[in-house]
Length: 69
Image (cartoon, rainbow, N blue to C red; front, side):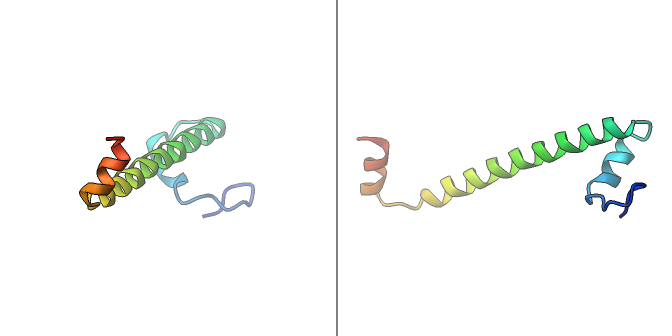
């Protein structure tokens, strides 16, 4: 999708515009940035949970060494 200034808009822009139809261009940019920051945080949380879940398959010797026992 191309904006009025000829630059290609990220795919999330139509979603943001639908949420805030009366927002100014600056407000839309702020909302887009906030949404991208939120999604990045959610992805980091998901990745960490997945790493921790894969660590649950460690044997007892490794678990005790990690927990400091």
